[in-house]
Length: 158
Image (tube, rainbow, N blue to C red; front, side, top):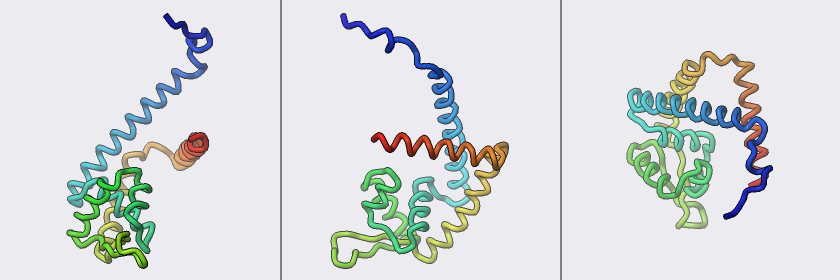
């Protein structure tokens, strides 16, 4: 039988509060994300992943390679490809071979895609303001800074 060193068997100071924080963060994300999914579907006939792709392409108006888009969204190339195919079919995104490499494609928003995303983004911002309305501006800035610092610290080690 392997015994655990005593210092490892004892809970780390504050670990229960950190666990409670994690559970609360998950609950908030799940509730807000569920509501956003429902509203995007009802108001725009869209999904959250489609919105995410449109958002990424809106930020990069010159377009993105598919591999960069999937890395940015933290999803597989296959997932992005399916979404992009549907957006191309809807006339919201165009795909073109990258200059100098016919195998690599760059995707970018069409004018219709820009207009559609801007309408969705405006509604999205209103929904977030409503759903997180009990959090004041100063609190939101403080929480955002804490989470950004955490992400930076965590990513540095990995």
